[in-house]
Length: 301
View 1 (cartoon, helix red, strand yellow):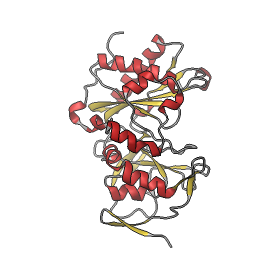
View 2 (cartoon, one colour; view 1 turned 120 degrees about the vertical axis):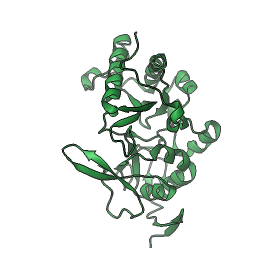
View 3 (cartoon, rainbow, N blue to C red; view 1 turned 90 degrees about the vertical axis):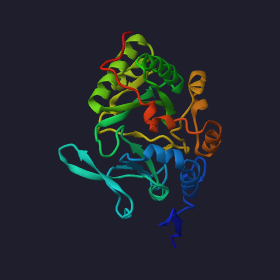
View 4 (tube, helix red, strand yellow; view 1 turned 30 degrees about the horizontal axis):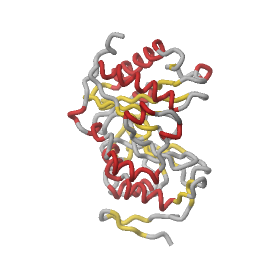
C-alpha cells in the first residue's frame, strides 16, 4: 500500500521509497526525497520559483529509460500551479511551477531532474539571467572548464557583470549571470560574441561551435541555452548519472584551485555540509540588486 504523507498541509502518496535509483551508491528513492525535502528545499525553491519546469524523468533509476517532459504529468494535483508557455508554432501550453515544499516533494516523487529557462513565467523570453554551459571534450575535463570560466569571469567583470559558477552535475561547469530583464535574443547575441572571442583568444582550449569533430581536448562554450526555448539544469537538482551528483554551486576559490576532476564532484550526501559552510552561493541570482545591465556587445578586447 502506498503511504500517504502530509507535506505542508498537502496529502501526498509517496511510492516505492525503498527502490534503488542509483545502484552504484545504493541510493534509494526515499533518500532522494529526503535530499530534496530536508537538505536543499529552501535554496532550490528560490531557483525554481516563478520558472516553468521541464522534467527529465528516470522513474526506474539511472539504469532505466529516461524521457523529457514539458507538459504537466498525468495526475498532477489541482493545487500545483501551472503557467502558459509559448510553443513554437502552437498555442501556449501549461507547464508546472514548483513554488512550495509540497509541490517540490510531489515532483521529486516522480523521479526527475529539474530544468528551467532563463526567464520567469509572465515574461516569456525576457531573460533575467545568462548562462554559459562549459562542456569538455575528452581528454579535457572540468579542470579545463575552470580555466575557461576564469577567463569569462574577467571579461564579464569588465562589462559590469558578475558570474556565479556551479557544476553541471555531469562533466562540465555552468556560469550564471544575473541580469536586468533583457530580451533573450540580445542575451544570446552577447553570449555568442563572448564565446567567439574566447575561442579567438584561447584557440588551444576553446571551441564555440557544437560540431563533435572540433571538440576533442577543448571546452565547448555553449551559449545556446540562452535561447528562449531552451532550459538548463536547475541549481541543486540531482542528475541522472551513475552516482547522485548535484548541479552544485561552487566558490570561485574552488574553481581557481581545481586540479583534478574529482575536486568538483558534489554528491547528494555532501550538500548539507556545503550549505552549512557556504550558505546559498547562488542567492544573488534571486536578488534584483545583483542584476547587471547587459551592454549591446562585449567590451573591447
